[in-house]
Image (cartoon, rainbow, N blue to C red; front, side, top):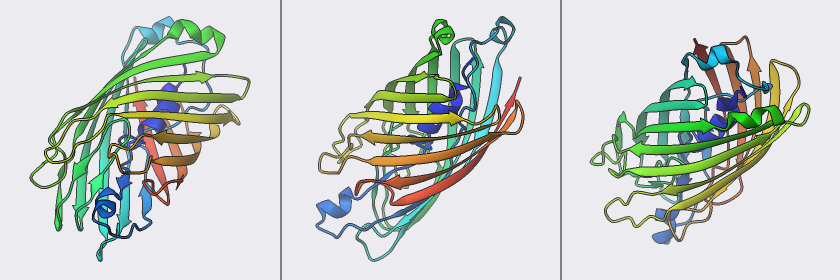
Length: 297
């Protein structure tokens, strides 16, 4: 079985982490107010790791039992966004994943702290869009759930295709400004092809964005292109480019590039280190992260 939770879940950080998600900040409120847009700095960590080498197929014994993976990371951002005071965001997700045969189920429960003036957060596939007032607040963020189905019959051709459905539950406090109070949904297709030690991969998806009161948000089309190289059974490196339509009509389309190194200590433990550069005013200027993942069977 392709260790697809690695490639595709690093793309997932763009939405959680994202990926976690990864929370992407937009300067839309500052732009609408006629305030000067400022560059911002991101430091974040993936909630998953990337594949080292793909297996041809999952054996029938492994197909018969659930396999579990737990992972966590952190996401920190700071920026003025045209205001006189910086806004800082700390995002700490806890992820539990269960896989059996072609199915992979995932749940992400995050803790969030926001301090500073108002801004709008424009997430990626998961739609981590929320509104903040001035001051500080912390608490549970929006929970995210996903189900992925893999076309395993294509593995023998070195081709890996996954179809994923996701939903964001509005568990974050709207009163505190930690969430929109609205449900989001997303669908995506992930494709990877093995050519020797190289593996190009791509994602295409569509997010149905919930509508928080007073903020008319658009649905979002998003995509990713990347390439990974496996140096050994334990070490892999790669790069990918992510772009998506902004949820706010007048905001620039977020665009980021990511480079990563993944090392697998054994069949259960792995570590991922990566850096990010933004290519639009609605993307982080730069960042990086570190995450650990543990799998038990």
